[in-house]
Length: 365
Image 1 (spheres, rainbow, N blue to C red):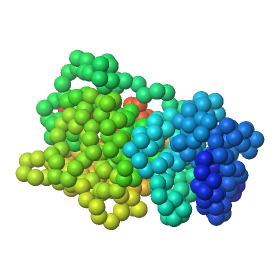
Image 2 (image 1 turned 90 degrees about the vertical axis):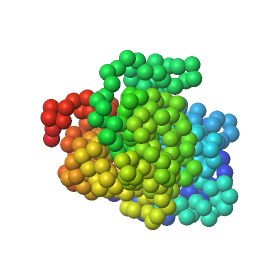
Image 3 (image 1 turned 180 degrees about the vertical axis):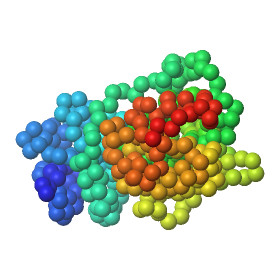
Image 4 (image 1 turned 120 degrees about the horizontal axis):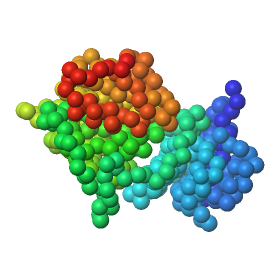
């Protein structure tokens, strides 16, 4: 099998050396070039034709976002961003994912050498996934469907028939990993202000989910926030599992509540989709609606089948629209899907089901 050819782009000589060493230790990949800035990288890419590049966010002569924008417009290819674990770094990383970067690695601000070596397994896993990912050229995020811009930069509702009162008992559960930040945006920006509550697990490290939730909150009609332990799960709101913590659903009297906990990783992930979906099967039963979006691995697939067996109706993103078809593929193999749809059709199908009587919905598969 041919080795994955990687070009490393970083202004730090130490980081370039460390990443090169980490990559070259793998039998299935090789660092074929290391560039100190995007202008040097541009020539390397032309000459060496890499399969994947790792790209620092902050660099001299041209910042990483500007370079990424040009790259994805002129020569789209898999990119793994290397971001500093700061609030500004998180916001910049989310913009990079919006532009088409496949994934990111959060490098530490101090102890760079030991920190990157501790992340070596994560780094090479993400490079492998990126090498086989479907790179989608994404335009600027559109305003939410059926919405108009407001002076504050968000969106406002246009007239729309309200969803049935029954839907206030429903809870939409979403799981995603690689490519999921933009897939989640696509679904959430189409949801009306009177949407059922939405709970989300996206594989993401600590320090990034706050910025992710804040970014979505400016784009959506619903209110989007990081979940906090013990808070009520309410219609018109979306709750994102904090990085480094599991999110599950529980019941307190007549209310659904969020449980956020720092327990052991599940399927190597914390947060884990498996944890959220298992709680949905146990607590929500037929009041759950499941959505499995793009991501690597199998996290949540078996639990999604448990949701289906408990009465949930489930949507799975199709292969063509996924960046990585791992988690959706496994959900399908477990028999967890009722409908397999392109990303752009999931929200509309979900809303149509919510607006219909349960007896009037025809299962597609």
